[in-house]
Image 1 (cartoon, rainbow, N blue to C red):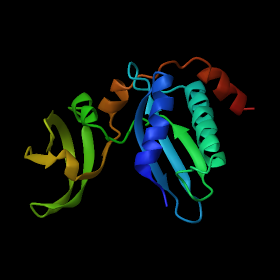
Image 2 (image 1 turned 45 degrees about the horizontal axis):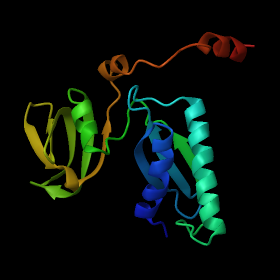
Image 3 (image 1 turned 90 degrees about the vertical axis):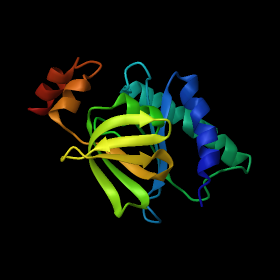
Image 4 (image 1 turned 120 degrees about the horizontal axis):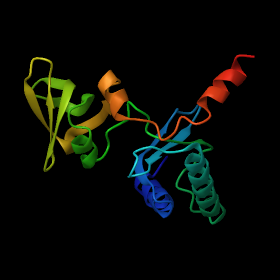
Length: 181
C-alpha cells in the first residue's frame, strides 16, 4: 500500500531544502482515515513554526501531486497529509535523539521481547554505537539494540518542559484575550 522508503526519499529532500531535519514519516488511520504524517524540526531549535509547517506541507503536496500526475505515486489510496513538529513528548526515531535527550524520561517498546520484556520505561542514559541504554525506576540499566526498537517517545515531565523553551510566546496573550470574548 505505502512504500516508506520511496516516501522518505521524496520527503527528506523537501525538508532539507528548507533547512529542516525529518523526524518521522508515518502512515496510519487505516481505511477510514488514511493519514500521511510528517514530523520535522529545525536542527538548531528542535522546533517548527506554523509557517514552517505550512511551507513544508505545500512542498510535499506539490511533489506528491507531480508524482501522481506522472503515474509514480508512492501512495495508492486517497489520504490526508499532516505536517507537524514532533512536540514536547516527541518520538525518538533517530540514534541522535537518544543522545540528545539523555537524562529525560522515555518509554520504549521493542519489536520483540528481549529478556522477557518488550516495554521499558525510565530515564534515557544515551546511546553507544547502536545500543540504547535506559535506566528503570530501580536504577537497573537496560541495553537495547537500536534496530530492535519499535517505538520510543519522551514522557512529559516538568524537566522536559523546562528543557523545551518555545521559540516565541509573542501573540499568546492576544490569542487568549480574543478567545475570552
